[in-house]
Every structure is written in structure tokens, then in C-alpha cells.
Picture 1 (cartoon, rainbow, N blue to C red):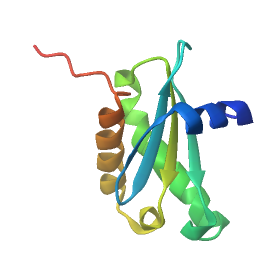
Picture 2 (picture 1 turned 90 degrees about the vertical axis):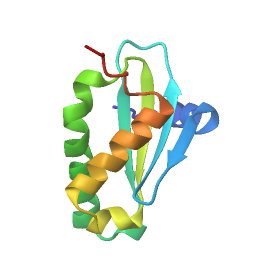
Picture 3 (picture 1 turned 135 degrees about the vertical axis):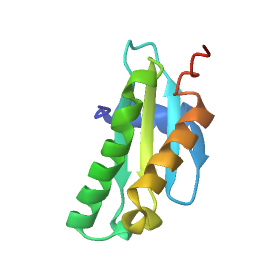
Picture 4 (picture 1 turned 90 degrees about the horizontal axis):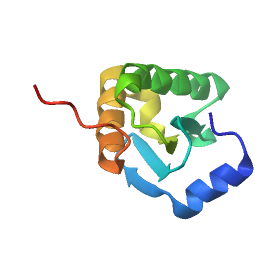
Length: 111
């Protein structure tokens, strides 16, 4: 989990960003052995209950991708207002597409 302000500043300064209608992803390569995530849900999304539910839904969409995440990334996932009303499948599909575009997902091995 990304928690230090200096990590957020480095991600904002040096990270690569990709966006869609539901989510925005900013990622930066690091020398760490793991991939760390942070989630941002602004007040435009709604009240605290809606923001917390949206973060849980994003984390749940991320869970099946854990085995194929490339190590050594810091990733910030920003929820846009449309995310609060979007179906879970749409959030998961958007997240997969954006993480693949920035290079966080390892390519699937071909048989």
C-alpha cells in the first residue's frame, strides 16, 4: 500500500497515466520486489459510504489479477464519478485494460 506523501509525489511527477470513463490509473516503475497500490475516491463520487463501497469494489476487481501482476510497480487508481453506479464487471474490465496499457500486467504465457 502506498502511504507516504513522497511516494505519491514521485508517482504524480514521474508516473505514466491512462484513463477511461470509469477509472484513471497512474503507474511508475520502482525497484521494490512487490507492486503497491493506492486508491483515490474524491468527494464528487458521493458520501463516505459510496466512496468506501467504490474502493472495496475496485479492490475486489483487482484480486483475481494478483497472480499476473508484474513486480516493482507503484499504481494509483482514481475512481471517476461514473464508477459509483457502474456494474462490477465494467469496473473489472476497465481495470484490466488500463493496467495492461501501462504495463503492470504480465503478458499471458502462450502454450
